[in-house]
Amino acid sequence: MVEAGPRHHVEVFPIMAFFDVYSVQYAYRIRPHFEPILGLAYVNVKVKDRSDAVIGRMHAPTLPVGLRWYVRGNAHLEYQLWPAYNAYRDHVEDRYYKGFDLYNEFRVGYRLDFQLGRRSLFSSLQYVYGFGLYPGNKPERFIQAVEDAPPFHVPSLSIGLRF
Image (cartoon, rainbow, N blue to C red; front, side, top):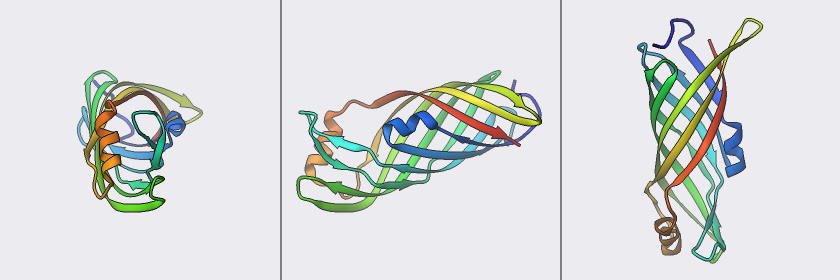
């Protein structure tokens, strides 16, 4: 069971920057096992076709929302929706396609709590599995590249402050 104590936390995801995803998230424990999540993110991912050629780049401010459920101790499951306003730059046409996108992520992880002085800190190790739900206003080559690509799955590490 998740212990009593700080109910709020803010976390950042430094490893995701290697994938051109920058995110900070806030969570509030409403019950011993449940934390709703709200975040800010910027997705700047290159889109590649079957031949691994870069055909464009996403420029997507995003507002992740989700729920974390602690199943046993600090082990947790998480689901997030990532709605985004994506100004996708198509490199073939040298043109921007702007519109709404929606992605989702399933996460499984474990939170490690520690103290630094009087600060209550944590690190969360997670495995992320996700895929796009709605591509918005995009050219056909983008939609084909997304359909050809497998769902993304990556390990993730966050560092956060509980208060």
